[in-house]
Image (tube, rainbow, N blue to C red; front, side):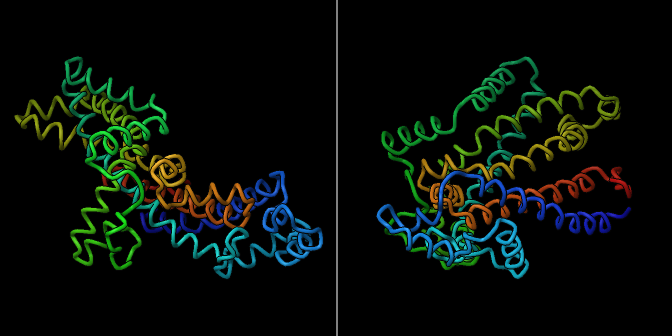
Length: 340
């Protein structure tokens, strides 16, 4: 099977997956105890007011009717109306997804730029000081709770040293760059506003490190393990015997073959970064999807919860597709069979 045929099949497979996601999330969200109509109306609302809200939003209908209506609207590109703020869920997601995407991409960039060299260094310097320090760094990363790390970063770099901002995406005195992607750093570069870029980048450093540290530690350990395996293979010995420099042996042969498991972990981590930034966004007051979905869950805002879940599910599907394609780019010997 050609790569293009494989991609088309994977795209078509998205449809039943998303259908299953919508069904599961719809049933689970409606299993949550509580009455969204009562929460919307307020504590002192009368029964007549609550019932009127139920009828207005279709909450009085059977679950299967509510689900069919939701799916019909979804096929038309309508994710429904938020019960909490009376705005279309699609508009809310457009406001919040870019912030989370920017934070997740920054965290993943940190993981790859730092984690891969550290893993290679630890493998090449096996059982030496650099290897021991890298393993300590990794163990701390996978053991540190996100909320504790975030608070420590704020205390040290914001309160005590005062070298980095503590919350938000921009200072109150900085003008937002013209919106193109919704990601402030990229939009500032596109518009040539370097002051906004520097400010957005400064606000991004602490939350990106807090969010990505655990995945940085995981990627470092995966690269180290894969590199140790690759360095023991016959093709590495042959490359050295042919007189290739150590840098070419490590970078061109050993590292390239070690990247396949690394890409797998990086792809899964990117999906988790998109859907798991709730604590980080809360600590740093980052206006992304994490904070949005927490508020929606507290308000029993079913359309908003389902919209968030669909975005995360679609992100996972697209990331997995990209990972499969990258396999063939890195290793041309990989071929996709019709049954794969």
